[in-house]
Amino acid sequence: MLEKIEIVDRIEVVESGAVQVRTKTAIMEDGKQISGAFHRHVVAPGDDYSKEDTRVQGVCAALHTAEVIAAYKAAQA
Image 1 (tube, rainbow, N blue to C red):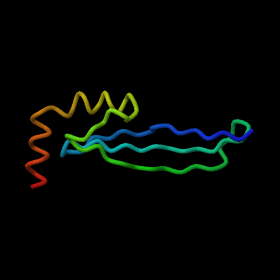
Image 2 (image 1 turned 120 degrees about the vertical axis):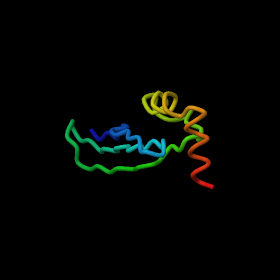
Image 3 (image 1 turned 45 degrees about the vertical axis):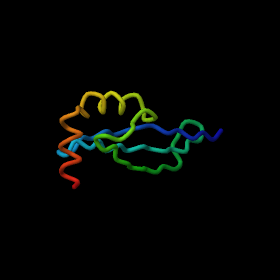
Image 4 (image 1 turned 135 degrees about the vertical axis):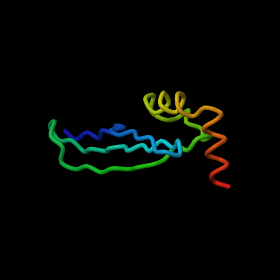
């Protein structure tokens, strides 16, 4: 039986306050991985993270304070 599994396997915070998220997609056959790929994306301070994995939401909620968002936006200008 083939099965596709997607999991967030890495959450990293960089100095700017951005949260880097790596998602692993694995194709499994009878419990053994036969293929896999990774996708990365960034959640910047001020971005909407409501549709992210619950662990990513928790990190963003704790990290993306008003001060961090203001500093990030100022650095982008």
